[in-house]
Length: 63
Figure 1 (tube, rainbow, N blue to C red):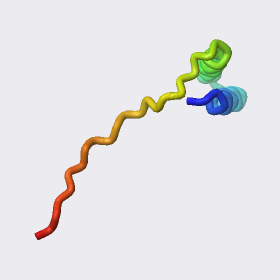
Figure 2: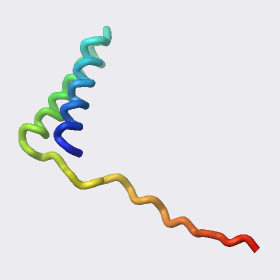
Figure 3: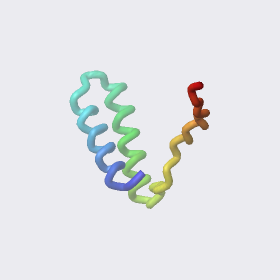
């Protein structure tokens, strides 16, 4: 993930935290935004794609 993606994600989390009336949800969102900010500040942003690989797909020929 790029640092610009993490900045956007942290910004969205902060917006959601301000809009909610549940203090527990707001606190959890703020914690996650702070975690993302820490990753950006320390430079621990991974640029590799960590998504799982698609399974092999067998192709069948019709007779």
